[in-house]
Amino acid sequence: MTIRFAAIGLNHSHIHGQVDLLLREGAEFVAFHSPEDDLAAPFAAKYPRARRVADRREILEDPTIQMVLTAAILSERAGISIEAMRHGKDVMSDKPGMTSFEQLAELKRVQAETGRIYSVCYSEHFETRSTVRAGELVQAGAIGEVVNTVGLGPHAIRNNHRPDWFFDRKRYGGILCDIGSHQCEQFLFFAGTLDAEVVSASVANRAHPGTPGLQDVGDMHLRTPGTTGYVRVDWFTPAGLPTWGDGRLTILGTEGYIELRKYIDIAGRPGTDHLFLVDGKGTRHVDCGDVALPYGRQLIADVLDRTETAMTHAHCFKAMELALTAQQMAERGTVWQQ
Image 1 (cartoon, one colour):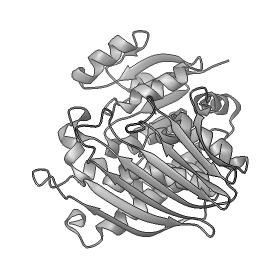
Image 2 (cartoon, rainbow, N blue to C red; image 1 turned 120 degrees about the vertical axis):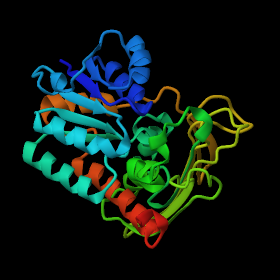
Image 3 (tube, helix red, strand yellow; image 1 turned 30 degrees about the vertical axis):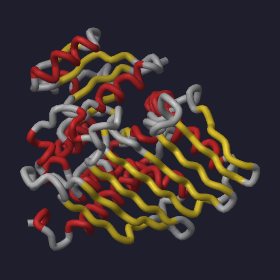
Image 4 (spheres, helix red, strand yellow; image 1 turned 30 degrees about the horizontal axis):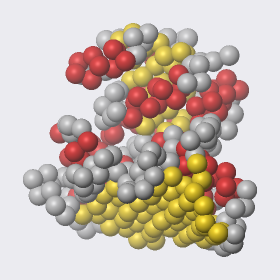
């Protein structure tokens, strides 16, 4: 058995990954809604079996559609997700799932009331083979108890044309809410607890005076009773790097450490998903090319069985709570609050 799903909102290219991860597992993509012709045309060409609908109510009111995906403008994702859940649909949102505490509270309330599945696709974990493999190694005790993580999430502004909303703080939610939510989720996952808090955070616009709403760099310090973490995210990928960002994650344990070069090993091995393991026996490079990505399969099973195997709601919401808290802390007393 599988599921039928649809998409509402194509404003971020992550929607392709969201669709593809379900298609890989045999799900049926039946419809999509996008008011923007320039986004809808290439999307329809890539997914010709999914019909474009003029009114998203055609999706919401179709009882045969079980799940709605959204990668709409960031500030609009919560509203779409809430509407879908109220129509009896499960939801997979691109990250961030929301841009304010008010939206977070409403999403949690509606999810609890409707009993629908609400999942944020934190793709730097769920769709990155090296991160999945690192999780397997940590859970197997390869580096002992995790005591610290360092997550670096550089991105490239140049990688595609950026619409006006990308530079509007109210619409994209801030750099820590947006990119930083990836890192918050991974910190929780590797720390192995939801008992976490933000210690400090900062954001700035260092080099883009022409777009004052943009935050081009941000960082945060996180902690649990047994683990600390540092996160830096930015829009400063140099033009000479042949990919959108040199994303890295270091996981320090009591008996060793793991470093991930997720998207490129600069001046080193070709390809992506490079994992380096250092322990009491030595150092080694771990090939992650054949690592299975279970999120899509697990999410489909959750829809069919009403379970929480892909990710618990508590974990999903806590990651966004940390990101929103860091964003608020970083902006306190700044122009972005005004």
